[in-house]
Image (cartoon, rainbow, N blue to C red; front, side, top):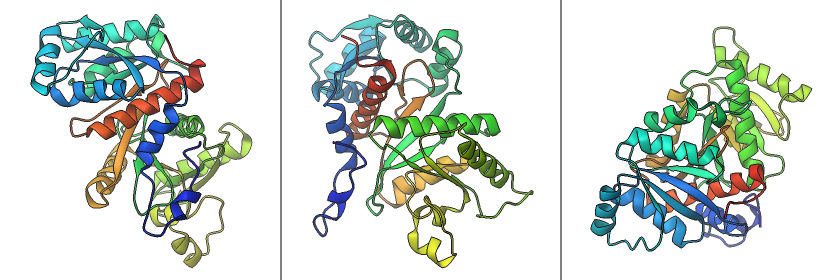
Length: 321
């Protein structure tokens, strides 16, 4: 099974697959990994972690304030069974402990619980052994009912105003995620306000440079085009009307946004106006990280766990047992 198999979308009129469930099905085909869940000290984060374990997606290692974890379990009616708990009395210490587990190879991924993103990311970024030759970036996997494929948006969570080298890594990280999900050659659109290069709009110049990197092999494994306005990236009709001939236009798998603000607005527009469902993952570190939001549903948290499992299997050659 591949998440890129879209034929079923058209198989029955009025029916469409649950693509987040598709991520889970794909993840369950491979060996599970241990994931350190940082500060699962409230109902939503602990439920998401335990449900991900129940569904066979991860083997959870709970890291945080032990009393708060047990209280959250009691409040939510959860049976923790023999799930290991590693005590840490502050969020910063829990994040540091989880990072140490990843560096030691004792877990193959991390999952954010009830702590601030900046606390977790500080622990990750400040540990040299967690770094790779890429900048860390975040990718949303988005199931939009009206779109014919799973849509990836990056970076809408970490890099505020990426320079050209960071944008290159953001693009490569998103391509790697698509590959981990079985999309052999994803179509990448570098978004801007126009398809024309305008020296006053920096994102159009950066997009053109990224495309040249793809032409020369600096970025590989994908069809890359840009700058493209949003309508040209996702609408075949808009591309036809404007006469844009491209392997990407109208059928993008990956949308690379010019900055965090535009990406965050785009994702939340899809979430709240198009009833999209999202999962999220941090790429470019030693291990993949599920960066869940306080507003995420259990299904979204499980889908994020599935992404971690799939990426870890590709980058680490399987899970930890």
